[in-house]
Image (cartoon, rainbow, N blue to C red; front, side):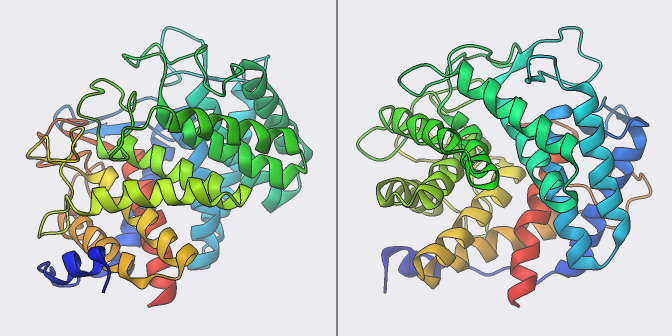
Length: 371
């Protein structure tokens, strides 16, 4: 029995929740978040304290697109395919002239392109083009990918066009941008996109400590990164490794994922932040990070053929299901996924971010498909 399996075998298992109902409720919440903006994009979050929806958020709307295409097929509800296409059309309409995607929400005062957001919308344009073969989505994807390659430094890092809303200009979680470029390389038959992705992961691994922990891997506090950004980095390294057939990348991601699993609580949640020794650095949990790590553990189980990754994923998903409110009268709360649990925790306090619901759906669908 592997170390991960021995660790997980001792874990208390939360009673199963209704995963199908939770998935449907999250999809309906995201549909309401899209309708709240009136423009085709998805509201960044619902503020439960102020009872208001935020403006449309290009970055995360972009990666909700493939989630809605997948859910349309999963559920048989064509409405979600139509919604995904509207999101992609909106993203193309607001794409900046050079090919990048703006930072922040649509109502932000600064209109500047940023690396991370462009990579996340690239996922959406690729998915929309593959689903519809509409040339405008391919054109947007090519322009975005070309802009990302042009902005990359020779060593593989991105140091220009950082978000003005992040405390740090250089980030290892940009490996999730590399993941998008690698997908573009395969989908569009353009090897230089995959080459750029590989260079970025190679650079990110120069930021690795002996225990697998990455420097420069948080929005605000690089000494105690969020599980959200740890998962961004880990998934990027893993997926580029799989697409480039580079086992060293896959092994590096597996080491990070294993370290995160060993911090998992008995109830299935992860600490919201981890320190450089992979120890808990918060009492609250980042609910988005739980879902993202569940996706990674399932991906590793599939990629390596090792089923011992699955209990960690199932436990994290079960925890997230248990805190989803399915009966609230406030339609900004009902079916949504909070940023933190408790709600007043240190990430997206009192808010229900759209990306939490997106990754929750992404974690649930493959599990339901194999049940």
